[in-house]
Length: 216
Image 1 (cartoon, rainbow, N blue to C red):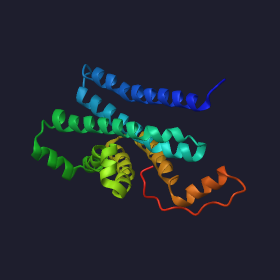
Image 2: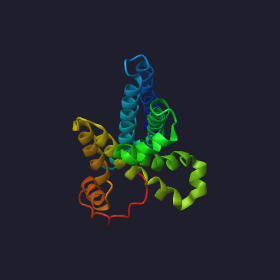
Image 3: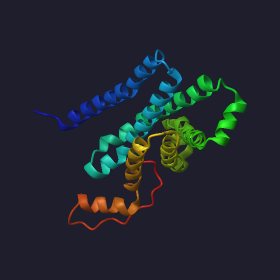
Image 4: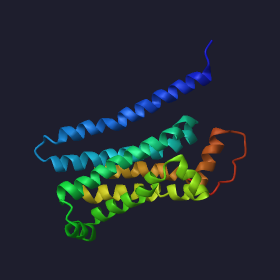
């Protein structure tokens, strides 16, 4: 006889394994980039793209639950977010170490003069406290402040899209990514959430929209 709870647990374990494997796969591409003609440019591009894709997947977990009732998706937000921060950090280190050789003057000049650098660096600063406080221990210590703090992922995602858009010569991909991020953020608006809840539960009055404070 089948055991649905046990089957769901096994499925969730395999999904977590798939998230870890899929999130680490771009590292192999970054290693291969070292042997290319322009390794700095290749590493910068691939680490940045991996960071944005994983950030979008992290933001997609809540809409999957809202639209399809996939509650297990909530458990994937943390690893996806942390892997995204890993690639953001590699992206920044490539810029600061390999491209600018840790020259503080040149780095500061780039931040001040190039808007895509400013947007990228601001996005990193927003994600940094989220990565540091991602543990259960920090969640207990911060209490009610933890959720509003982790809502910084929303402006960080917008800054990531702006960084990509202002950096790119061809705007097709940044605009596609931007549309996806916009849709994932719109789903979180209280009126939209209320309509989705009413659609999923026909015949029941929609609950009043709650104030969005959590990074879900």
